[in-house]
Each structure stands twice: as C-alpha cells, then as structure tokens.
Length: 402
Ligand code: CS2
Ligand code: MG
Image (cartoon, rainbow, N blue to C red; front, side, top):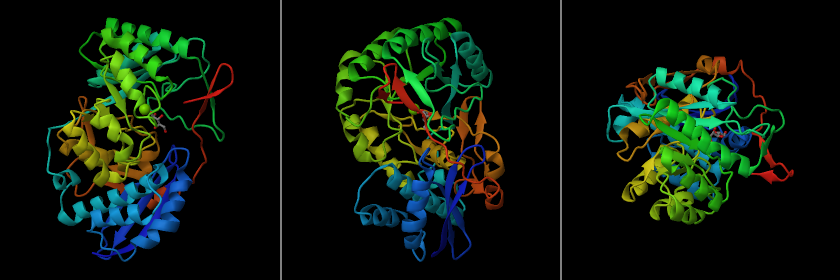
C-alpha cells in the first residue's frame, strides 16, 4: 500500500498543535502528533522538509522498516525534535494499519490487557484551600488518582498553576514568562500541602506530584523522605535526568516512588534508570519518544525490571497522541497510570476523538485505527501563534530548571 501524500498541519485551536497527515493510494489516511511545546515549527520543518519527501512512494504497511530507515538514515541520533518527527510518522502508520485491518490499534498490539486505563487529573491551587476545593472536583468526577501542585508562599510564579482552567497550559507568552524559585521555600511547603490533602481526603486516593526537574539529587532525597508519611503515588522528575546516575543518590535515601521520562526521547535516555531500578514509572510519551513502535520497546525493557508505565499526557500532547497513548496503555501489561489533563477548547473543533472517560478510567474506543480524525478545514481557521514555555529564575536572578 503506497503512500501518496504526507503533509504537515500546524494549527492553534486553544494552543499550537502540529499534526502529520499520511495518505495512501487506497485513500486511507493516518494521523500522527508532532507537537513539541515551544518548538513546534522545528518539528514541522523537520517533517515537511526532510521526512515527508522520503515517505511518498514507501509501503505504509512497513512500520518498523520505516522507523529504522528514518532513525538510522538521519545519521544524527536521538533528541526531541528528531524523535517527535519520527513518532508522528510511526503513529500515523499504526493508524493506517488499524484502518486497513478494521481494528483499533490496541487489538494490533495484542488486545486489551485490562478493562480500562487508570488516569490522573491535575488539581492545583494558589493556596491550600483552593487546591482542596479543586481536588474535590476531581473526586466528584470519579478520579482515583490526582496530581497536586500549589503555589509556593513567597514565590510570585511557579510551575503548574492553571488559574482554574483545569487544563494547565504553560506556553502562554509571546516571550517566555519568568517564573521564580527558591528551593528552601518549596521544600518547606510541599509536605504541608500533602499533609493537608491527606487530612482532608484520607489515603483512599492516589496523590502524585511533579517536582519538574527543580531539585538537586540530595534535595530530591530530602523531599522524598519528608513525603513518605503521606504515601505519594509518585514524585515526578525530582532532579534533571540528563544524568541518570544522579537517581542512585535519591534511591539511597527514600522509598517514595519516582517517575521520570517526559523530556527524554529514547530508550537509551532511560536505560540506566530502568535497568538499575532507579525509577518506578517511566513517563516517556508516544509523541516525543519515536511513537508506538519505540515506546513499546521501552515498556518491554521496563517490564523486566519491575518498572511500570506512567505516560506523559499534558494538554500540549494533542488528542492524536492521547489516543495513541491509550491504545498502548490498554495493551501493556506493566501499565501504571496515564496522565489525562484534557484539551482546551476549541481543540474539539479541529480534532474529533472516540476515547472516553468513565469513573477514573479511560478507553481508546473500538474505531479502526486510533479513533481520532483531524478536520483540516477547521484547522485552517486557527493559524500558528508562537508561544514559549516559561523560564525559571532563582531569587538571585540565576536561570534555574523550570
Ligand atoms: C508536566 C507538563 O504534565 C506534566 O507532567 O511536566 O505540564 C509539562 O510542563 C508540559 O508538557 C510542557 O510543555
Ligand atoms: Mg511533568
């Protein structure tokens, strides 16, 4: 089945999305998410200028061969731009394969390994009362797992504050918003937040927290230790993971579970974290880690070491990526939890999806392929709008991890 066209659709319904559309001689169309928040046009150009010309004429059914051809053929290895572009191609080809077979993608991956995909939502608040109020909203909707983030007293702007939108969109500014940071204020505050949530809601709900790369290894060890009485489901990205070995120090001091991976884009970037059991959940996403074909290899490696999946699923991964993630989650035995932040309106005017949410669990649906369609005419109504992720600075003005 030959590919006759491959085109990139950049659209901004509520936020910027980049979607690859692959069409075959039989008229079957597949889609892949190529959105890299804050660097969208880098991936769009990589696809449009370098990969799309290679796809036309190729056999759409040869997914693994195409993956190897694009990965090894680039010569230059790994990195978020390359792996997001390859991911978009990979997911679009799985979408096509499912449509040709008349099967949802999860059936092509071995069928359902569970009845539903446990998901977590995002509760945040400028103060603890506001956080508790929003947290209750997630319980009311049936969530069994909720991420908790709060502002830090003494800091003007910190990561994770949605302003009540429910969907946290960090890329707001036409120039990077400046966030502020002081580690001791944060380390003193987070245990108080966990204590308040446990006192209010008890231990029957999973609590997750995103440290977002902002601590040193020993600070992360201190945080993990301080949170043990409140039994976190995980703390996420406690320290930058370019040095995977840094996690050995954290592991020596705390049993608080750790999740890492959303900014990492290949199996080699998480190999030590998995094989030394330095993490408990691998958070790589289907959109930024080479697609379904590569992420399933990461999950297979993780299974050998007792590491489970906990895929990234923020609103800046499009509904196409979310659907692909849910298909893979449903079919993966060492699945842990799936992030489900949702998508801001009017994304629903551009993307039509068939995945569903019910009582804290999601299901990708049984439409052939991914079950997501892109309305290209609607997409054209929302032109690209350059946006940047924030930059974080310590109180002394030095740039810090955001
Ligand atoms: C976060 C994201 O969802 C998460 O775990 O780390 O909100 C992340 O900040 C964004 O995806 C960046 O674009
Ligand atoms: Mg995160």
